[in-house]
Image 1 (tube, helix red, strand yellow):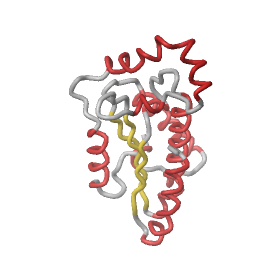
Image 2 (cartoon, one colour):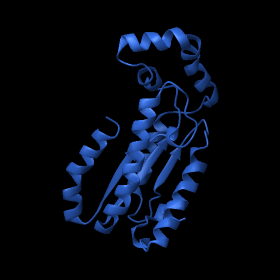
Image 3 (cartoon, rainbow, N blue to C red):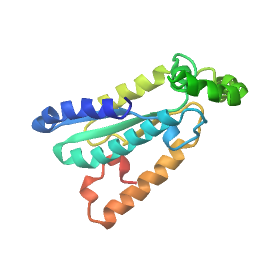
Image 4 (tube, rainbow, N blue to C red):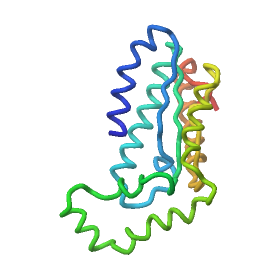
Length: 185
């Protein structure tokens, strides 16, 4: 759902955005695609990584139509959401039991270990606030990525390097005009 649902919504909106010559695609990513990614959440992380790759590709493709792309990159928020509780267990009970037998202590402690990294003042509303700030910005000034990561898992550093490499590659192949303001590092 993270990648396919997002793509379907964007594909539905893009004809109107292209016609009007302006718009904004906002993607909610995850620091897990480039930062610390704890075990037992592989399908979630893979879907978020696929969504991130799609968002970066769309950014170049829709820019000539006057459409900005912004990826909000939340880190682990362990309060205010049941995110990790629901993302880490397979629906197949037989498969879940096999992992439960082997990894029971780790699975039980994972939420606590993640919560220990997150400052007490961290609020999941920071993600919504980041979206509001991006929407309010002028066209062409929005950063490609906005990190909201209270655990500081390193995603921001890795993303900056990856985005700089992509920008360098675009310049070498003559696609400078397809670089967004936030990716032209």
